[in-house]
Amino acid sequence: GQATSAMAFGPSAGYGVDTDDAFVVSQLGVTESLVASGPDGQPRPALATAWAQQSDPRTWRFELRPGVTFQNGEPLTGQAAATALNWVAGVAAPPRAVRGIGLQAAADGADAVRVTTTEPDPILPLRLSSANTAILAPSAYRATPPSVQQTGTGPMTITRADGTQSVTLARNERYWGERPQLAGVTAN
Image 1 (cartoon, helix red, strand yellow):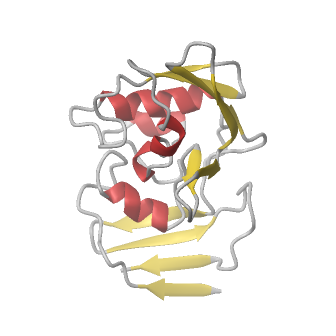
Image 2 (cartoon, rainbow, N blue to C red; image 1 turned 180 degrees about the vertical axis):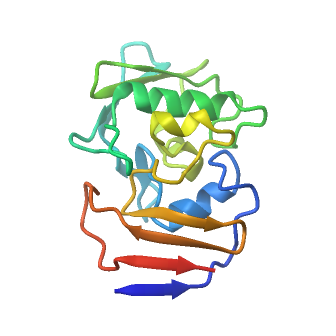
């Protein structure tokens, strides 16, 4: 089935994941972060299935969910996650979730990413539940801002964006989780 819905807040910054637009694409089911925030405010698995603080209290290791592909078919890897996190931490005005913590990410093999901060950060997993820390396919970063069209991991993929007026989405048939009921959505 198809649905049409009204967006409470339309995009104003080209769907940039480092802006408030990150919440729009997250709510539309296009992008996902390593961690989700549960209703109790506690971090829970999303693209990462487990995480642990390492012997150095400034470093965390996040294990990636196996078998996840981006909407364009690229695989989710430690390097892909590191690219996304380093990009958002390095923008001129980093989002509040990662601002001022000295976040640096590096692949830990194909199936994990290590994230280091300047000081020990016991709430880092919760920080990485922010929509601003969405993990996009490496190809997304060839554009400025990174393109969210076909580069997220969520259950819906953008097939057409008409500026700030509307966006058309289709079911992501490669989605790792539960198959969406709707085949498509137009959000105005």
